[in-house]
Length: 67
Image 1 (cartoon, rainbow, N blue to C red):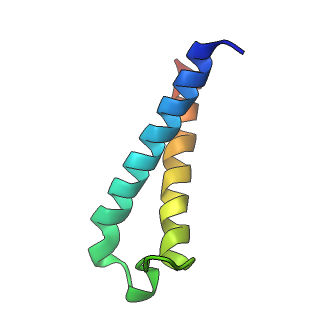
Image 2: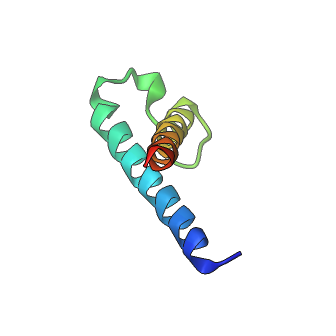
């Protein structure tokens, strides 16, 4: 496997994590208290943050295929 695809995959994943977290933290004030993440716990907030990152990653991958 060559390095450019690995680097591109890394950048896509990093961008998805950053944008997913930005979306989560922007929506955090409107979310119910049960959806707020508490550090050192696996809870609904962590799952919701993961889902946002996953959706952004899927969007990035789909957009790259359309190019």
